[in-house]
Length: 163
Image (cartoon, rainbow, N blue to C red):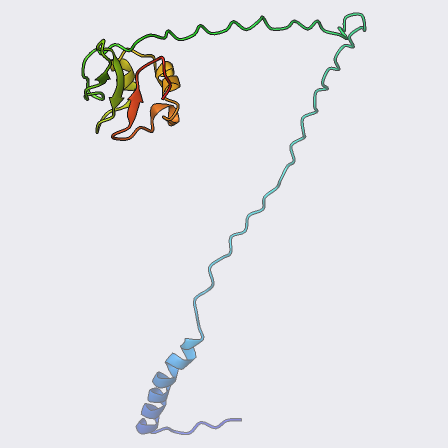
């Protein structure tokens, strides 16, 4: 049994002070109630797979309809290309891409042309009214279908000789 003793005011003040000091320590472990955990139950219902539709089987072809040896038809005979017209070059006058003066024979027909800066093979062919293919045949030293000509190259315009 505990006996009660009279307490002094000073002792009561100490007890109150200790209670105030210990109160935060006592409350430190106290936290609010935890938030409720929400759970959801999901029920998965499988959907049935569609039943495949059968692929129809091809109807067999009677052997009488099958052609075992097809008829081979050869191609028609190749028609040779017409030769390019050959004849003297005709100077139609200076143009952009063929501005130089040609060297001519005693009759005045151009027989050669010296390439200047800015000239191109196609313009030279047009100026002298010579098809590109013929001018290339007349100048076998010109490579790259006439794309590789250089300043001071001499282009043959005389169809009777090859460069």
